[in-house]
Amino acid sequence: MNLSKLFLMISVIAGFLLLTPDTAKAQVNGQGGDVGLGVMLGEPTGISAKIWNNERSAFALGAAWSFGRYDAIHLHGDYILHSWFSEVEQGSLAFYYGIGARLALGDPDTHIGVRVPLGLNYIVPDSQIGLFVEAVPVLDLTPSTDFDGNGALGIRYYF
Image: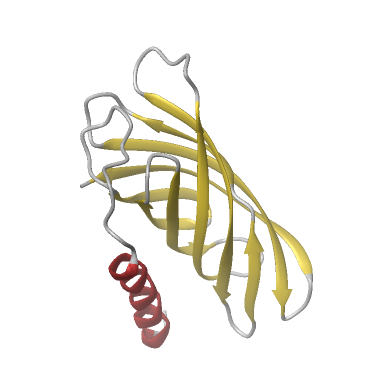
């Protein structure tokens, strides 16, 4: 892996975390705080972060490796909204949707696209753990217009 690409990936994640306002605790029925950090497995596979703004909206970030057709470092950031299910006996379950951007740093091409994440988020009761599954249609804008998709299963620890 190119050292400059790794530095760029770490800088982008740190920038998002530092610039996000600290607001009310949004973990519905959970014990954690507003910031979650964990892993996602799928396309792409890597590190996942989530920063809650309130109990309905959040920023989701990813720094990962894309094993798909690009074979590239994959960075994304999404703004997502949650619709909570009221009929859950334990924990909290929400459907989420949003919009975001993706940067796939491949060799030789860099791809920039628009993401539309759709997923489910489950907060484990009386813990600092959140689980998620998502499917994400992607419209690449550069170097050419093309449709793609991402999808992942993940777990985050909230602090």
